[in-house]
Image (tube, rainbow, N blue to C red; front, side, top):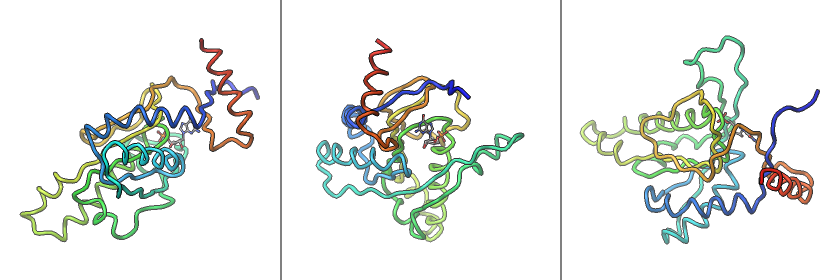
Length: 208
Ligand code: 5GP
């Protein structure tokens, strides 16, 4: 069978530079206290973003935590309200998740926003952890603590396509680059990195 999907090869340097360009806006408008990498694609971007954020904001203690999410292919007839169930957790923040996030500006980092199901799941589930944690505080403190807890999102690439899920609330959203509905080949998936970089160069030449 012939692969009909258009592929776009992205190099480590492309990703590094997109993150560098995106960081000043993130530092100015969100200034995260914590990075939450969605594994596995968000690991490398979060690590690189930490370098630039530390430089930009002077926050030398900025930490990265990780969650692992995997998208289940929906079965035929799946309804919109079942969307969250198509994403499964392979790793989470542990029993103290809510405590870790409460009162912080938490930036969720992933490599690509495709259907948006993964990002929707991440934000809504992390918010649930906050709500659980808030139960251990007096009711009079909860609104203030909830308001002090922020979530933002950074993705290296956002695909311009119809999304199958919404972002929760008015979550600040930052993007390295907007792309079409292509299949992105990331360098960490490559076996032969030199050949990957050659293909990336060809992709760039062919679009000129
Ligand atoms: P979602 O559809 O939930 O936005 O994306 C789910 C996950 O699918 C992403 O985190 C990523 O791991 C994977 N994915 C989606 N589009 C692409 C792509 O173009 N290239 C690669 N390598 N992975 C993708």
